[in-house]
Length: 217
Image (cartoon, rainbow, N blue to C red):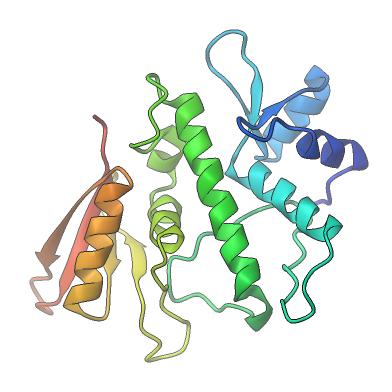
């Protein structure tokens, strides 16, 4: 079980720069956030610390709890560690995690990802994946799809939507969709998000799928 944030850690995250996610604190405090996956140390001098997508999600959660919600709007699920999980499709989803609360989560996570690209890509580019995405291919591709409004498949049989899965290739994921138009839309979304994507046919089943890998240039 993820340990709850300390009061000092919550204050640091909430005080991070709204635009860049830059953090201020002691070396020990910043290192603790890095170990929890909520911050990263920039590789170039002066080696400042910035929020990761999970850190941005933690701040979003703290702000949502501080603001009164609309009576008809479901509350965002509690997240003691501020960990955001992109939906690859096929996983069970609690009803309370749907609706406007999830939309806010996804939007915040995607903005955090773009900021992570800007801070870690050598040319500060946000139009292609960063190193974190290259080591978390399924989560990164799923986030790009969900942020663009695509619907992940449900856990129950027959609940159609996209499904992102690992492949034998170390730098590529497979995306499955219920029909050709949805599959093509996934290709367009991934390409617009900085991925190389193309449609292929499975030899045994003859079903079409998308093979996608992070673009490097």
